[in-house]
Amino acid sequence: MKQLQDIVKTLQTPHIEGNTAVEVLDITADSRAVKAGSLFIALDGATVDGHNYVNKAVEAGAVAVLVSKPVEVSGDVCVITVEDTRKAMMACVPYFFDYPANSMRMIGVTGTNGKTTTTHMIRHILKGQGHKVGVIGTVHIMIGDTSYPIHNTTPDVVDLQHILHQMVEEGVTHCVMEVSSHALALGRVSGVEYDTAVFTNLTQDHLDFHKTFENYLAAKCKLFEQVSAPNQTKSGKGAIINIDDEYGHRVIEKTTAPIITYSIDGKGTLNAHDVEMTPKSSRYTVSYDGNDYTVAMNTTGLFNVYNTLAAIGACLLEGISMEDIDKAMKTFSAVPGRFELIEEGQPFAVVVDYAHTPDGLENILQTAKAIQENRIIVVFGCGGDRDATKRPIMGRIAAQYGDIVYVTSDNPRTEDPVQIVKDVEVGVKEGLREGSHYEVIVDRREAIQHAIQNAKPGDIVLIAGKGHEDYQILKDKTIHFDDREEARAALKEI
Image (cartoon, rainbow, N blue to C red; front, side):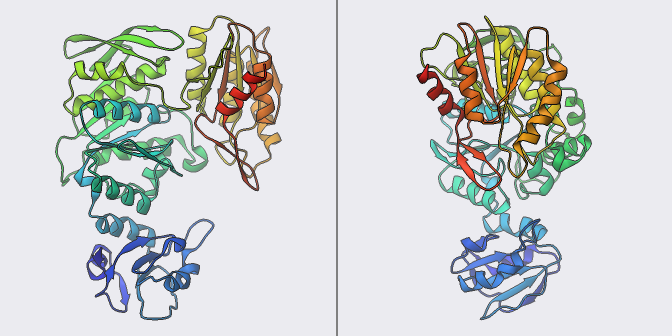
């Protein structure tokens, strides 16, 4: 609850018509969420203009509206006009919720791949030290042990500040969140003061939005610029950076905060070596500050060694000892949909993974290669209305590692799934090895069934692209679809 006259003080040169001596009980940019006492923010979006819903908001009980265009409203409603309502929202919403990020340790994880697993590893270690931890990311929102659904990796300003406020109300001491490049570029994390920034890696993705790779990198770097910005309210800042990634040095240049780098090539302040992997676990030695420690975990893959190093670095900055970190990692379980093994007693491995970028797909295929006994069977596709340039690249990667490749559909959205598959197929043909082959099966359920029906003892069936998702987005509707459920059903049939 805030006085409207105090809220308008956060805005630049607002034009006010009406009484500001009223209480604001809620703030929203969604006219459907307006209730008595709300301040409604009219955003002019790509497909919907909030100014068309101002009177609907007033009818629902809004006491004030924030606009950038002339509007006519009925009743005793205050109209606040600004040049840009989106920028105004970034200023007034964190104030309305009392800047909740300032009351917690905020750990932001950014990068193309590994964000979800890294945030959950950090949560697991912090929880082991008795902290109440919040998580915001691709899979869900967690407040303590309670999970809530999420629609964007990083929610918009209103939703994010509301979630952070709820975390503070419920006694959360540490919030670990995935920070997407979209969120950084669009200002969704405005008003959030981070204490630790983590960089996992950077490979091609989201060029449909950022247009160039340099723009994509610049968006990611905003998190590291912010963590060392002047005039912040909290101390104890730091950055954790993957120095093996070719862009790690570029990220380092963007921050003056204390830095922990990590590596498996001996270049970091945290160095992993003597890595041992099985299909279900991994173990390695990590050198830090002149000492060696053994880290064992119930997840596999070199990419997860990197994820662990990122999590270790973040928790070291929180004052947790290597001994306690190692103890916690022994009980960490894989995140849903991240190299998740599907077991129904079959004589071959079935793995579901979220990999939907060239680098992500290659990482899990390299892991499969390292533990394979027989053939690698790959089921994957590429999403519609997203970066189309990565489609042939991913097709080439799948063919280079896979013995059998099933090219299929994956969230086609408004695009023709057949055309998407054709784009992928170009790369598959280029990457085919002698003795390997591929098949196009647009129906994803059928593709999964074929892969499992054709698997032999010792094979690895890798179903990539959707991971934890339980839906398929089509042109005119969204249907329930879960790769894990489909794999189990196919396994039971055989």
